[in-house]
Amino acid sequence: MPFFFSAIICLALFLLLKIRVFDKINQLIATLRRVAQGEGNLRVRLKLPPAGMTRETLDEMECMAFDFNHMMDRLEETYTQLVKARQDTEAAKEELLSANETL
Image (cartoon, rainbow, N blue to C red; front, top):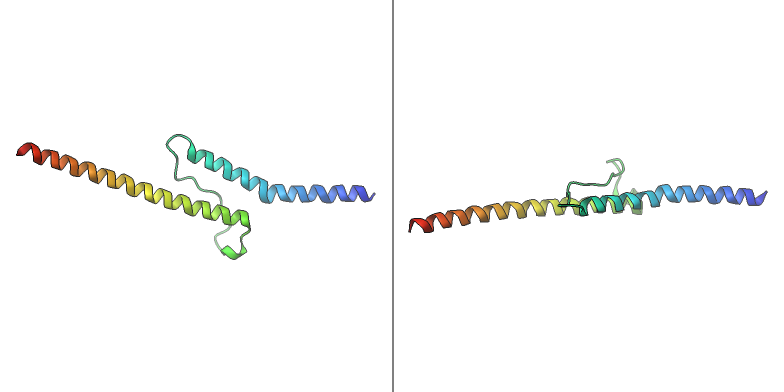
């Protein structure tokens, strides 16, 4: 009989661990793979807990999701700035080439 209760407690703890940790780690891995594929979709984000929660009330996995999303926001912003800088450089190059041809 004690073995039965121990087995049930172990199973409950395993399910709790699976839901609270393993599933979130697998979600992070899948999201990282989506970002890494092809040209890298920088708009991918992890699901976060409800908006009213503070960082102090989040568990480690939720903090990791929050930090991942923040990192993706910064990467997307940096990439957008890089694309704009490249376009500005191309426009300046074309302007210089045009001015050079008139000389």
